Image 1 (cartoon, rainbow, N blue to C red):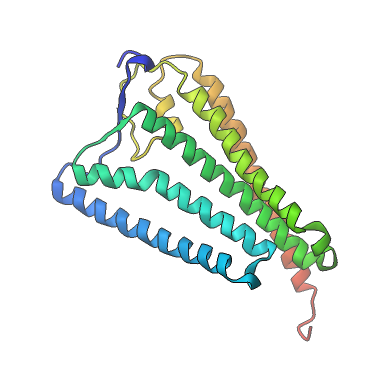
Image 2: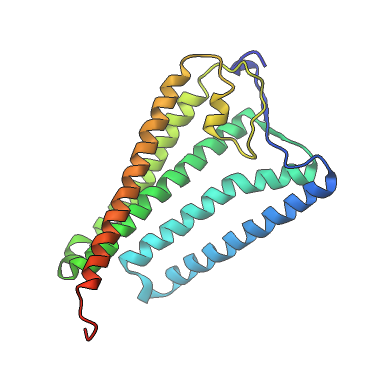
Length: 230
């Protein structure tokens, strides 16, 4: 493919060429996908149906389950369909959609995990302020911020990545469309712009990780200060 305008499809990584191994890959991914659907579906159903679970902690857990379902549903079904149909192709727009949705769900998960760490920190270290700091409106705004950050990241990354000219073929060395692999196909120095966005996103993700570690460090310190009788 000479450039992005002439690229109508991409070729994804095939785990094996033999039909038998392709079917094995299909059944393996199907088992993983069904396990994810069952586990997250049960969590969502339990939280939605039991009013005793309508608390901030379980509200955030419900959102996390929805995001997890979205991330696996974005990548695994297409890979399973390719294995079953003995093909490797994904359309250009299908690839763009897969990239955008994957960024939405993964980014949202990272931010939501940081919010859940803050929720546990307030509940354990500042229990008297819990209702004030984490009211229903505040929780809804925090969850909306996590989802909104995911959509914003997705728009920026997808627009930047798929505006680059491609001249290194159309083969993606991954079983789903991934931004770094698409950047490898670019023949323009403009990819540095997208690389910069990736660095910013990774930095924010590391910031979430550090925040989670610090939150649980404070939680452990608070718990260790409690006498065993209490």
